[in-house]
Image: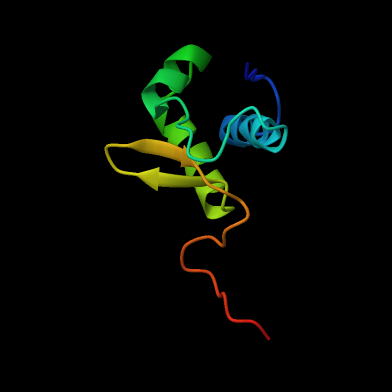
Length: 90
């Protein structure tokens, strides 16, 4: 369960991203598994949906999630390179 501290100097979206990243690292979510919808997680945490969306975008940029319109946030297999990354061997 994610917890956020509204009094913290760390922005809420970063707190959410950090919490989700920790859960992803610990294996609480498996590759291919869907995360809660942006709106559902926002309701659960009592924050604006754009805050959660920003956290999801951050994790997608780091290669943890694949964001699919109308399908949500899907956990990526970290053994595979992120889409658009350079896969040529040097």
